[in-house]
Amino acid sequence: MEFTPGKLKLVAALFVMVFCSAGLHIVSRIALNIGVSKIVFILYRNITALLVLGPFAYFLEKKDRPPLTFSLLVQFFFLGLIGVTANQSLYILGLYYTSPTYASAMQNSVPAITFVMASVLRLEEVHIKRRDGMAKILGTIASIGGATIITLYKGPPLLGGSGFSTDITTSPEKMLNRTLGCVYFIVQCLSYAGYMVLQVPMMKNYPAKLSLTTFPCFFGVIQLLVVTAFTERDPRNWRIQSGKEVLTILYVGIIFSGVVYSLVTWCIQKGGPVLTATFQPLQTVVVAVLAFVFLGNRLYSGGVFGGILIAAGVYLVLWGKNEEEKIANQDKEGATLRKHLLDQENTEECPVTVQVLGRCGL
Image (cartoon, rainbow, N blue to C red; front, side, top):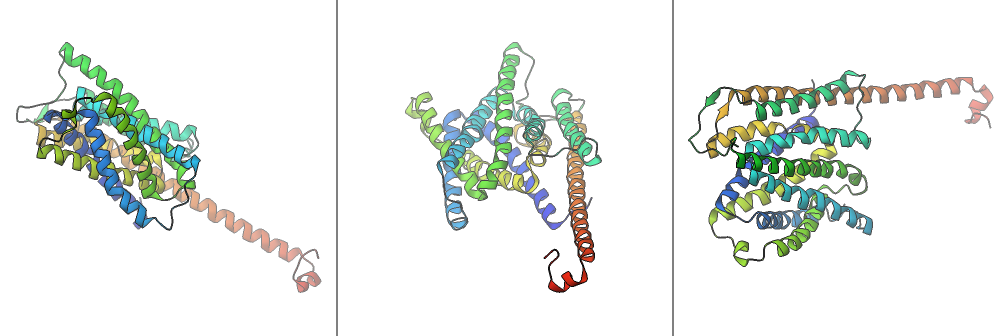
């Protein structure tokens, strides 16, 4: 598989997105362990992201940013609702009832959901009878399958943790928590997939990538302020009481809500929503390792096997996208060549006297 500089930049951005997103699961779990209010935590992370993204979007895209219309504002409000308010609120609730490893594994349904949404809306072409289409389908299935193995099959432990573990146990209370967390994550995955897919048509009318990330964040902050005002009446829950809380808010605000959301928008523009979502399962591997290092979770052989399957799935999707682009370029070259030959034939059929005048049929 050949990689042009543009493709290498895209793949590098996707890997950065994966590692930063993996850190979100660990840092958010640490924040919950500290006792930070869930909804206040989300509000502060988005205020931080807005303070970081706003100046860059304003000054860097000042000349290139299209004028705002009422229709665009409505679309930004809706993107903020599903991509910020609903997505992040449901995520933190799901994480509260489960663990970072389980959270990352549940989010591996995003590629399948995105694949279906993009195909139904005709935003992603899938040629089932061609090898590139089959590679994209099989790669998506392999990635989800690898994540499922990590979730359901542990296998023999390879490395033992420090004793502290956030893994879900089989007690009735824990099983109920796991069920609640599962429900929250399913709806969250729908929201996140919808956020990625709906950005594609918006990019045609509003190609300013930073602003396309900033405006939904702005509306998300407004929506979260309203929600927080009704759900957190105790002023003590609004206070930041330790340096750890500050660090967790800065990480998720700057690195995830700022950097990762911008990378997601850029990667969708360059590679499409399906390719961007396909890298999601890699988080499960990274989170499993980070959870072992920072939270004391155990590392199992099932995780290694699942990680290999995920890597194979991502490669298949990349290969399929590469072949799809090759076929598209060949079709363009063929169409150009046919047009050139037809033009030559029409010119040769013209009478000599008409050719001298320079126009056929006049």
